[in-house]
Image (cartoon, rainbow, N blue to C red; front, side, top):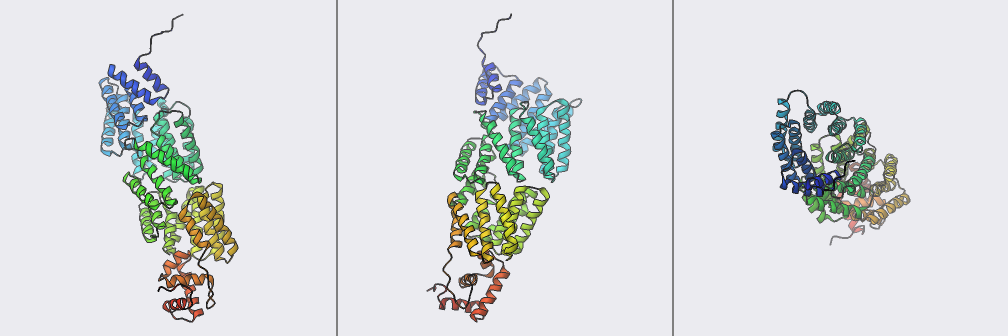
Length: 554
């Protein structure tokens, strides 16, 4: 029976063992030390490049991958050289360095073209071609190319290529509107990912791609489930740095949605700290944007402004957050212009859908009911086309708000109640409370003051608990309006309109303040003029001051 060796493991062997145990920092340190003792062979250089990448040292990882390419070419290992060129290109793309990425892909394509017969590496280059097709708005071509790569990956038994190709087909199907098929394929991909046969970098890419796709199509429940799974995967590798920051950002978004704002803030800040230590990670901007959103919701406008600007500097578009900040600051026209421009620029229905409800809100605030109606109708159509439950809930609220502004509270009320029920089922307290404010306004418009007060009271309690100060202030104003003093037989609503007229506001501004249509404002003004027996806005204003309905400007 052969004796087991008792010789101590070499540095290289310990580095390989650390790599197999997914102790990435240890693997990098040991493999780097072994490389100093004697230059590593391409296979071990690949291990070093992967470990270095997974601890967030991206530029260093790229340099090691260059050595893999060079040593593979010297050894006439063309397949390994092509794969290393492909991954170097992907690393450059991740940092937004398009020219070197294109150069390395061209080099890989040349090597494939020089070879005899088909090789598995050609499938990886097809993945890159499919990405280009998808980025340029040709999902049909992307589906075909990804399916070709999938066939090659299956034939050669390459699990990494199979996963990348299936992910690509799923993304492309979603892009051309086949949401159910695309999501179903991605669920199938994740079965392969959790089998243990897929390399760690591809596992992380798969998690992040699926989560991003679920968020894109408003499939919140599925996004939350995969975020939990990604978190478990990250936790199983304490030395993992790459992917962990993105996981924290996803967790912060989920926590905010469910009303755990303090926890969300802590998670977003931790994500920012981790990502700031890395070299150009694109999720750094997302982490800063998430922090900006929480500042805005809590009424910390100066901090929100700074964070939105910083996120923009890091490459994260600041819409819709920056526009909603302007709206909260009272600059409705600025918000509406920003959102109209951003919506026009948005590529794809899901990108537009994410901006349409803020656009509705800002248009209503400026009294532009027609434009708000157009945006709300587009949301309803998108929601019907893609069958996304969360988008249907958002679109329902926007539709109800427009009906309310048009003076049709009776039709708006069941629409808003259905949206509120759906927000409650999603465990989204802030969104549910915002919807409840609209329900209260609908009840008030229908003359049911008691029901309106109860709805607004309930919303106030939620806003107070969350620390949503701007929303809280608005509800307090709705619950405690200035005391009405009867004059000339005016109703409470007519008195509100009269006070705003006396303040010099236009019909459009009055409509925005009271969340009613301009047509309704004009009708109220006509009734006011008749009841007070005055011919004009100036006469009505003079009457209001003379009878003490508003404080004298002197």
